[in-house]
Structures are given as C-alpha cells and as structure tokens.
Amino acid sequence: MSTDSSLAHRLAQRTLELVNIASVSREEAAIMRHVRAAVPDGFEEWFADGQALVVGTPRRRDVPLVVLAGHLDTVPAQDNFPGRISGPDVVGLGASDMKGGIAVMLELAAWISRAHPALAVDLALVIFTREELPVAESPLPAAFAACPELGDAALAVVLEPTDNTIQAGCVGNLNATLRFRGRSAHSARPWTGDNAINRAVIGLARLVTTAPRPVRIEGLEFTEVVSVTRIRGGVADNVIPDLVECHVNFRFAPDRSPAQAETAVRDLVGPAAELEITSIAAAGRVAPPSPLLASLIASGGFAIGPKQAWTPVAQFTEIGIDAVNLGPGATGMAHTRDERISIAELVRTYEALAAFVTRDGAG
Image 1 (cartoon, rainbow, N blue to C red):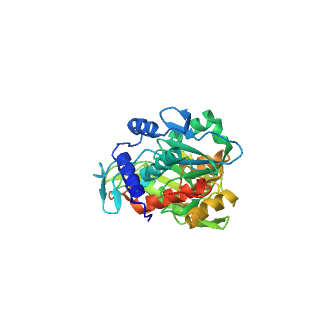
Image 2 (image 1 turned 30 degrees about the horizontal axis):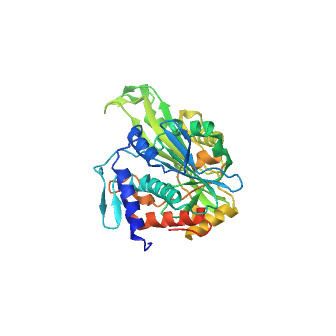
Image 3 (image 1 turned 90 degrees about the horizontal axis):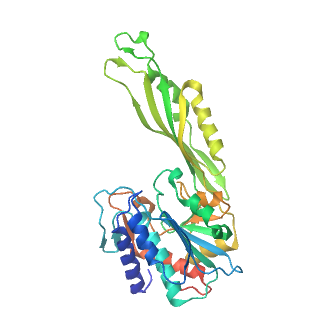
C-alpha cells in the first residue's frame, strides 16, 4: 500500500460517499447528479443524458485517447446499506462492484485537474447506469452514437472488479426460455396424456451433458459453458403436467458471434422443445498486444488473464475499441451481503493508472 495516507483516506472517503448514495438499477438519478457535479475543471463534458456521462481532457490529437469506464448502479440491498469503513476496508452495497472503481476514476481526474501533470495520453471518463440489467437496457449505445469523440479511443479500461489483475475480453451471455409441451391427464391414467416432465428429461439430456469447451485466444483460455439454471413444471400431485419451462444460460467464448451462439444452443436443444431467446450480449474481443496495453500492464505489474463473465468491455470492442477489465474490487465480493473493498487495493489501482497516464507517474 502507498505510504501516502492522505491518498488512502481520500479514496476511502470518496468510495464510502458513493456507497451511501442509493443507486439500485433504474434508480441512479441522485448518484448521477452527484458524479456529474464531482467532475473537476479541466475535463470537458462531451455527452450527458442522465443515463451516461462522458467527459474528457482537451483533445490534442497527437497522443492516444484512453477511456476509463464504469457503472453506477448496484443490485438490490441485502442489509448492507448504508456503508461504513471497517479497518482496512470500505464495506457496503456496491463497494466492490463498482463504486470503488468510480472513486478511483474521480480521484484521478481531481489530481489531474489540480496538479496538471504531463499526460502521455488524453483521458476520457465514461460513467453510466443500468449495467446490472439486461444489455438491451444499456445506455452505452446511445452514448457511443452521440459522442463521436469516443471513436478515437485507442484503449478502454473498464474498472469492473478484477482483484487488480487485467482481464482481457469477456464471455458472451445468452439467456433463453426452453418449453416442453405435452398433454395433461390424471396421474392414475398417465397413458391418456403426454407428460411434459418426461419430455424435458429426455430433451435436456444432450444439453446438460455437454462438457465445458475450453477456448484459447491470444494465449488466454476461456471456458464456454451452458447451464440450466431454473426449471418449473407441474400442476398438482395427481396431474400429469402439460408444460415444463426451463431457463438456459449460455456463456459463450469470444470466438462466437451472438448469431453463432444462438445456433449452438438450438442445435443442442433440437426440435423437441420451443426455444425463446430472451437476451443475448456479445462476447468481448480479446485486445491484441500493443504498446499501450504493455504500458498498462507494466504500470502496476499486473497479471493478465481471461474474463470469465460478461462486462461492458464487449460493448467497446463491438464498436472497434480495444478494451480490458482492470479494477480494485474483489470479484468474490461482488453482489454479496458482506460486500467490501480493500482500501489498499483502491490505492494500488489509482497509483498504477496515474503512472500509466503520465510520463513519470504520480501518487
């Protein structure tokens, strides 16, 4: 941890301040107002619509543009709001996922505005809502369309919790409802009906026995996996059911497009059931090696691995921007009742990013 105790204090207090502004998905208006007011002088507002905020240092064009991105919303509270500082941690809803990351972004912007360091890159902050909801509700596509400046970005760093490792790419996320239909009957005479549960047992066999598929991309191994996560059927103890519904979740590797992922699931299910795709989010392309990415890795001595989950990295790579995940939060703490973030990890991320965006580093 940095010996700069004032930095640790500022980051902890800023994180706690954000934690203590309730921002469950679709209820982020107050925290968006707070964050917008916290953006310091020296950062120009490029876009704001209440759901996404894009600000940046004045463009110089002769240096690369780097984006730092993060979301404001949280999952619902689990008796963990408001937050508190407890020893070495900030504890509370959203501390790890990902108000600690937002705090790092804002503190870095404040330092740049206050100290005027020599920046080796131009810097933009993209702060947005509704990340914890299906991707169809994401405000990022509207921000991308309305903010052409972002098209110049050479690298986006999404500050999702990664335990201060760089996680490249991300798996896609397909959700579907699978329906097996039969014909109801009295359970004393099951042969007069067609048991939808029996159909489901047979129809799910191939899907549930499909082994995880390892996929290696740019030296990183992703694991593609399909799961049945919910199942519902039956009317009463003495009724042969005529309908079973299952929820299917497919985490697909970056070597598949959304259309290819849908085809793969339909092939596994076959014609025995109805399949309704309810949502699908593309996988994130793995950023290829580059001097800018190498500089980011070196700035914090970060390990690099694959992102075995979906993140907005995919939305940046969809529009052609190389992107990686790097954040101070602990992945194991996200969405938990005991959610917390280490103050030392906040400092580590901040110091690495400060070194990355300057010629000489800073603290």
